[in-house]
Each structure stands twice: as C-alpha cells, then as structure tokens.
Length: 227
Image (cartoon, rainbow, N blue to C red):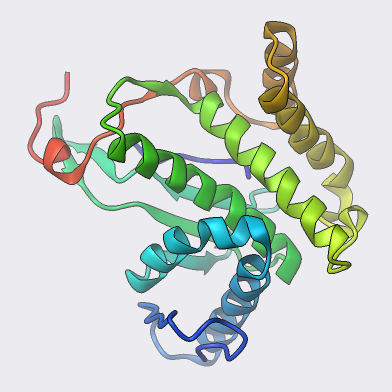
C-alpha cells in the first residue's frame, strides 16, 4: 500500500516452524502489537497466496524486520529496499516493513501481502542475477495485483468482505488493486497510463513512481560510490 521506499505471544495458529523474535521492548503496548501482527500473519499464511509468501515473511520476521507503527491515516504500509546511500556511498541496511497498527487483522494481512510482494520481487530478481534498474511503478503493479488476488481468496474462504476493508477509502483502493490485476493479466500502454493516474490521484508522487531501483545484493551494495 502507499509505498514510501527509503533509498535506498508466538501464536498457536501459526505453523510450528515459525519462531519469531521481534526486536520490540517488552511493554503492554508492544504485546498488543505482537499479537495483532501474529494474527495477521496467521490469516495470511492460511491462504494459497500467503503460503507462497511465507518463506519471505519468515525470513524478515526472524530478523525483527516486520513491525507495527503509528502511521498516518491512509498510509497502510511502508518498506525499504535495503541498499541506501549515506555520505555518497551505498550501505546495506536490510529490507524492512512497517505496517499501520490501526488496521484490522484483515487489513493488516492485506498490507503485509503488498509489502512482502515487493520483497519477493527483489529477492527473485537478485537470485536470477537481474541487475537492471526497474521502475517503482512495476513493483506497485505486481504488489497491488497480488493484493487483489489475496483479498479475493479471503472472500472465497468467507474470512472477509472486501467492502469492509479500508473504511472510507475502500472504493479508491478497490479500484486501484483491480486495475493492477487487470494490467498484470492483460497489459496495454493505455491501461498502464490509467493505472499511474489512479496512483498519482491517490497520492503517489509521479517522480517516485518513475524512479528506478537497481537491485543489489549486500556484497554489491556495501562501499560502492554513489554516482
């Protein structure tokens, strides 16, 4: 959801091979946050879409890289690329995901699927040795389309009604994710331009959507001079 890329409790309903150690101070509020996050993950991994994303969820959770935060209204999730620029050089900080703590369980799961889809795409491109820059808009098409499939699956399982998600922004978000799904399954330049306009109208900066991301492993990232 509204991706802001930075340049750059254990639940019994989860499978036993997931053993997360979140790096959050032990407070009453943090316990509530952990429980909400685990419930969202449990809902996610009990779908076919979630099962495909589960290895990536596990990887980041075991590093304490998925956390809930008090994000502003309309800002559902945030993630970082891992390779950032500091003082003219690249440094590897690792991928992270922040999700809005105010969301319902189903909304959290949906936002998680979106952000994890970004990470899955990055990992697959790195594993395939693909080093060419890719536009942020390409990541958004893939993530929103996967999010659409996830919500449809939840509806088929009678776990949610899509009209109950994202409150007063429901129609806008529903249109965006459906457009992304149609675009991924039947690409056209006209549909792509229309999708970009939807994102821009929603609040995505045009320059950010057209920014390119060069996929870099940790080895490729560290110490390289930024040009």
